[in-house]
Image 1 (tube, rainbow, N blue to C red):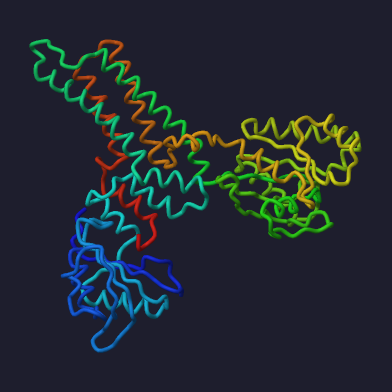
Image 2: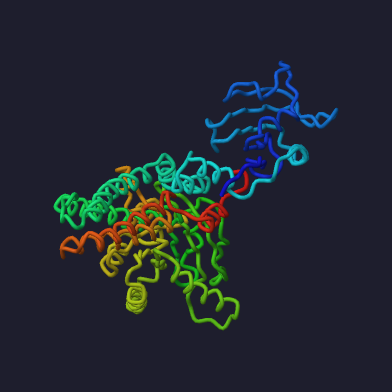
Length: 465
């Protein structure tokens, strides 16, 4: 994929604002910008200016002044894309933005496609493929943890780890290939003991990276938490308390929530998406029945379930018995999902009633959503379900499903190499598995790629990046 033309796009979000940034990239970016720019303090053209300089002036269309702007000049190869780049900071009027972009289109530019600036950065060797993908993750990061992981990947933390493994494996691969040239002389250039140690180490690192995806996927996409229970136990009040805003309608009338309500907050830098569901009960109301059906669908999708009950109901022994049965049903149906049993409205209980409740229901969490009592402790419990140790240790965490798939395939090939070494497989057969492992390593960083793969990756970017 070779791009020789000059592209232009709005680099800031569309819509009116204080300022907007319009970006150009390509061989003629500076000369095209210069043809539409009139400096305030200097008659020098932009083409004669040093790289990484900013110039005040006007964007002009013939004798018409469109706007007073600041123009930043970046000359190849010292730019984001590795090409000549110009960024124009103009006033954020929709009219001004479109006038400037249309002016450049008439003067030789083409509208950039989604992610094309970053695609050019990859094609010109400014970023490898995993770093380029991290740019999109960084833009979409909405909590501390996802931002931290994206920054680490964009700085090359993941890439360097993969590149080191690939280089070491490639060194041994070249020795194996060399042996094939001297097959008739029966010589070994690759020390099989050292090679086996290398394969074991690569396998260990790959397994660690693969295991980290469980955490990385959660951090990237947030943890869906379903709040379920009977009507009028305070599910909507709890959602509002967690979000610290009146997100859901709260009423004394049972069955107020007819549909699921979702919102997301950050707890300890991790995104949690809370789902307030319709109360589970027998009903003849058609609309409420649909809501209850959706409740069970949301439990299926959730990674954590909060089973909320009204603590006042636990005074009734028959309720306690029924409640325990319902808890067991959920545990049996979703054995791998963490289940938090929460008793709400404890502000209406005295000390002896609270003690009795704790004795009846094991590991129950007590709170009053209305008064905020126990809400912070509930957040701490939710955070405990995430292995934040990997973050604290600044370990490499895999968040991209494409990388995860390539790592699984690479591990499979490395395991084949290990089995081949243990069984004394010939060098030519070992070389086949080694080449395949190297192929999957290369897929991650972009040494091996194709137009379809790049198209799929960069289609998810925003235009202007």
